[in-house]
Length: 385
Ligand code: SAH
Image (cartoon, rainbow, N blue to C red; front, side, top):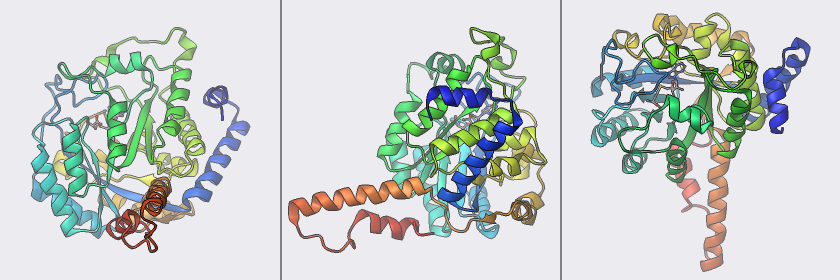
């Protein structure tokens, strides 16, 4: 699919033609990642943040935001809860919080890995290379860092750099790939100032970065942020992308078509604009992951990245049997095990094959794969799940 075709789909309004897009995305999802819906327990471990992102309610300058940081014991409790609920992954997310030191998080990761079979995904913002490396060595499996928009001007306007450092998210994504994290990123849809061309380029960027996990959701204005009060428009008014449900489904579907083997969630932001069928429609138009919120009730409302987050009012039933029934009702099954993205597993196999071949070239001794990094990876990470 070329750039022009992606833009055409993003602008499409004819319901019959859109049915074709939904059908193709769903068929591609079925063929490449199957019927399973993987559940990832999301734990929002800290709302402290040093950044000044124009869109996010956790921005440092928002004095109305009451801050919290979970204790290690509380995080461990949610990990056990995730296991009890049958989830295979725990996602630890936070603002960019220097109170989360490298040693503190290293210990948290080690303890979760020792006590549970969970895959651990980190989403802690822009951290230093040595921290990312230490956490990978401690057992963290995946990292989520959205690049938010591929339009560089827009990105810098909504995401001012921290102090004098200009750490670029694209560079950090490369570092994460080099560290062999399973790699996740994504964008917001309908950011003021985002054009259809920009959004199409975002989707092309997902493919270029060979992402394993891709999260997209509508931009939801937070009243205590500057972006909510800025009248920022692209050059021509009809070029502004809408931050609505239909555009979100289109981006999910197109993302599945350009990245068939990735894990793609129906996000909380989507469920926030349609609490009754947002998840189901997302899952039927390309998505294969849901991230139920396991943050303890007393903290949940304080992790206020945007208003009226659906999970704030979520009941325990939504996380347990209720969610399983909703998934079964659309003819899907709940994934068991870690649910690694086939793109990541395939990448590791290819890396191993390359390595084995080059070893053979130099030593001509390797006959069995027992000592290969891939076999070790299989033991460590249960890639056959
Ligand atoms: N500090 C971490 C986690 C941020 S929250 C980081 O920056 O990576 C995770 C995602 O929520 C962000 O990447 C952003 O895409 C999304 N988000 C933040 N504010 C939002 C808003 N107002 N509307 C919609 N999505 C938002």
